[in-house]
Length: 290
Image 1 (tube, rainbow, N blue to C red):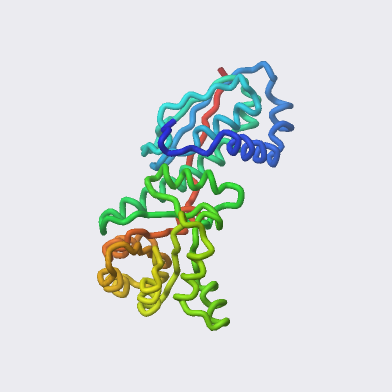
Image 2: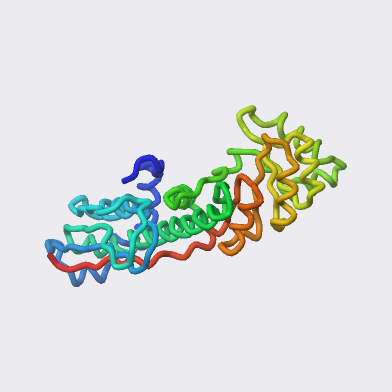
């Protein structure tokens, strides 16, 4: 396993897998119990049916281990590796009944996480054709699986935005609307956020017009999120701003637009689709008796 990708800690993996196995009632697999003797051994191979980025091996390993410590998974590749179709990325051997009962949970994790990693890689490669920008995820993650999907984003070569609401100050349109109702300006909101937040946190603010962007910069925001602005509008905003302010582009970002967005000079592009729209990769577990 690649260690510098900061894999979710073991307790997080253990708990998520236990929940998934309980949901599937894997320990009470009536089909396997009635058709496969407990002493029968088996072998299997995880096969990529389409090209993509591998992710989720350790989660799959945990799924099998929780049903039987005698199941042994051997990986041929590390998470984060681009895999060609019809490639066996790992093998498993041991008690066949436990293997079959854990199969769906193991595959669900691998397929989902490999799908996220694969689409992240696509966005990173397309953004690089436009400029030197960092592709980041959002909090639009599957409830309960954020740590895994953020890991998958990293496996695909992209980066993580704030993990949760405590991680950073991000003043969004609804915060500004609430402030305007009280008669507060962008400068007032940025000042209030900076006074209330720890000194280690950046203050980021979402804007959707050039005038708001200028106000945010003048107010001393560390990061200005340009929301749903076209590249022709973003470029002069970025070019006119002194060095030291980071710009993030968000909204309307897809594989057809990200190159032009990156070319505006924004340092960050946040893409909700990395997690909320990633299709699961086609991976199968081919099992046979030993």
